Image (cartoon, rainbow, N blue to C red; front, side, top):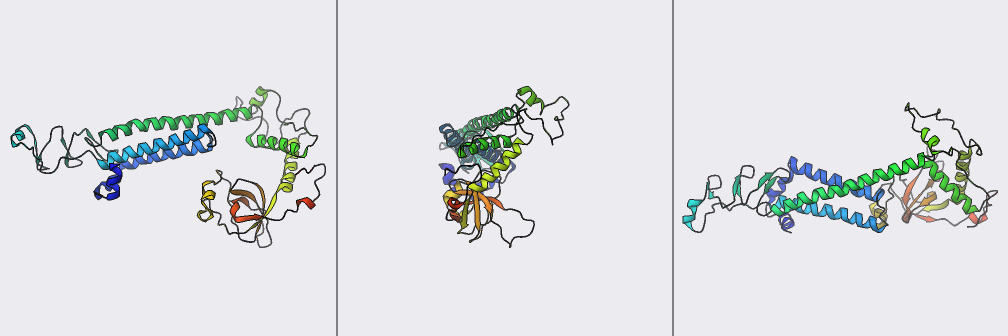
Length: 359
């Protein structure tokens, strides 16, 4: 706690200037980048926070960062301890065994040495470290050593997360390539199954581009020439599939999406910021982890929401004549707190032909 007391009480304001040096700037920059990237990576990819392993993993990352920074600042601000100016041994006869420092105008205590950078005699001096912009000595020897121990351990943990993230992404990528799919097409196939099950239809969706052979699927992406097969516009399909089976399914899903969308009325203005500070703490801490846009809302507007989270919704703004020409749609995320559901009119709407409404 000595480091924090020194900073909070400002016992030595000059110590804060130690941060204005290339050593601490680089060291703290590396710590901040590695810690931040590891935490973001663990939240988005490996492990999911809702699992026990993911929670333990995230807590460990925070723990590494806190311990590394604590020992780093302790080594920097507490310092090594300096021989008091004008110091001399209690027994004046012992001075004959000691060196005299002309700069500090005092005798050098046993195991102390004068540091030209600090311009002081340092107790039990080990060396002057540019990374903490201070000496390593009597008072901060343990903190400095713990920092050197914890930093590599934290880096190993972060490196493990990075490697597992890349491995997971590679595994998922190869899995869809061997089925001749893309990530979006895999999502379309999943939604096709949900749509058929939801309406209890006598349909079976078969992905049309899977050639039935992993090798044939693989060679559509990887070739000896490095140029993918085909022209990118027309693709070979299975014998039992229509050339436009996938696009037909997409049209069905879009129609179903319009049927399932829920109409909301905007009750509070929303600026469209990623971090709306005036919408509550829960809204801030549950921000969607996606690059999809946020949309600005004004009181009285209407939104068709198609999906959502507990505190956020995603949907299309219902446009009127006040919008400029050429703007076909405005869609994105917005806080659920800003809207309220309109009275449901879906019960009076006829169900699309061939579909069952079991809602």
